[in-house]
Image (cartoon, rainbow, N blue to C red; front, side, top):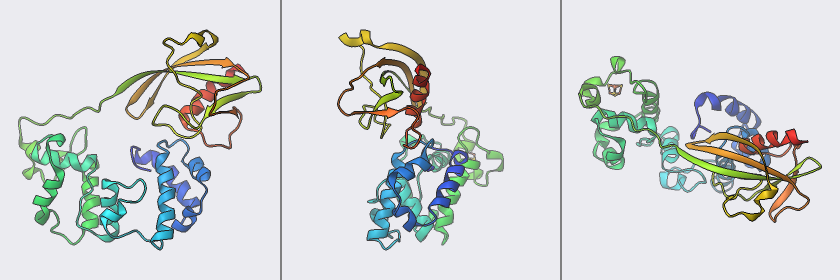
Length: 290
Ligand code: SF4
């Protein structure tokens, strides 16, 4: 849940989720729609699907236990380099670091070298002896992440209270490395909604926006060279941000009896099905037409 999402946003979802699914067994038996409904509003729904798929594999193949080796943990759906290392350290006390943005920043500041110029794998190998001079590897992994989040934080590091400042090149240097801003991608898109007089909208499970899934956008296509464009009426122009994408959206509609293949009519009043927030916003806007 915490991938790309802040702790304060996740807490109520986590509490509700773990109340509903208190064990790995109960999660593994859950229906995907139920999981997505609990996840609704949190975004990045692939995480929920992967969580469900992983729970099934753990129960059926690993006797409800996590495998011990990092390479084997990595074969589970949705678990990559970072998560496999966190799990191995937290659960099996393995000697490893979980390289999230916070930890990478701490290391880059200690050496006053930009993150992109550090070979982290090599760094861990070379410094193995000093880094893991402890029997508390699970605490070390967590402490590094917390230290990056609370002390050596992204905006203004708290060097005044930092216990390692005498070893920190960033602190001592006059030429401090600069923060690299995250690239924001601006995109203009046109969304075309087919509507029926019965208060329905045509939705599809296929779409051409890679970051959305399941019951999605009515239709997105280029207006350029589109001869049938006259049939469409502009409903609104609005902005929507998803991750690092800033979307400038033109929302068009037309009432129609027929819809293209792969589309199904979906009642705008239907609240039972899981819908991504992005699609819900569109439904809210077209609802003024009924
Ligand atoms: S001295 Fe400042 S920059 Fe260096 S590790 Fe500590 S908090 Fe980070």
